[in-house]
Image 1 (tube, rainbow, N blue to C red):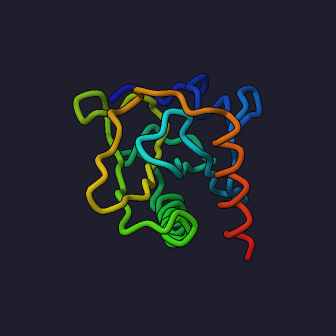
Image 2 (cartoon, rainbow, N blue to C red):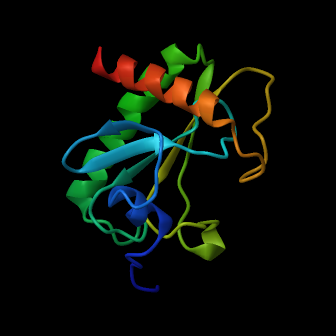
Length: 141
């Protein structure tokens, strides 16, 4: 397995070098909207600590990130009136990983509605800003 690359896009987001639609942050985790969502509200949850993927993340960081992911999934169900949640996590290129910083996809789902293909359509920035504001407000409630 290759080493962690501190110049991956998520590391740049964490450092504030690349903008994002942040919905949650604490001392160990960060969550923001995917700009090419597979469904409305598609959120990415990442550890702040450098971790290439599930295979090398310290267990305590993993436990914290998954707790945050669960909280965001619960809130997403309400905010998007979802019927379910798809949770995705990929490891290494052969496993489907594209960005090599551990991340969990939280994707609100509705019965009978297929997800868009991965990385297919960049969402309107105003739509993402509105979704981020709704999720962030619900997480604070």
